[in-house]
Length: 160
Image (cartoon, rainbow, N blue to C red; front, side, top):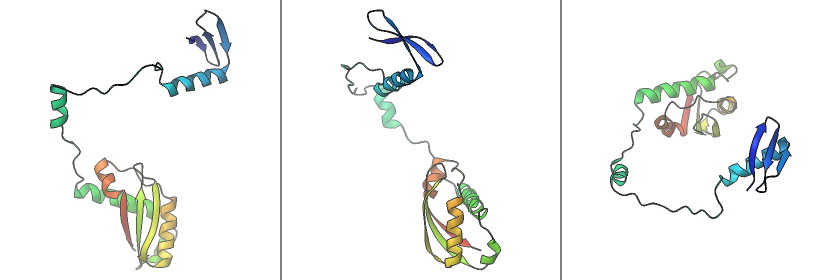
């Protein structure tokens, strides 16, 4: 079995099972590291066998309940305002849309990136501007999984 005997930044020394040492450059070293990480350093003949939990361990899973609490109205309101301000900060000449309305549907990733956006009605000019602004916006990350669950598919009603 080959293994690394020493490593100095851009080179490594390998020794095979017969005791012969080989010097390798950075590319070979990178290849070896990638190969080892992909195989997980597991023997080829090893087998993973499922273990049936018993006793106290099994009881822990039966009685375990989720500690995630649902989002409160105040948390939802605060995050909705963060979304509104983030998108509106990318509007240009927002005052020209005073008195107009647009409804947008968005889907977002857990990190706040908008995955999709579409107009669900309202003033066409405002909807175009709102979609353009939303596409430029990276929303703030939701503060909790419960908030993300509320906003992952959201309807935004712009009434200016």
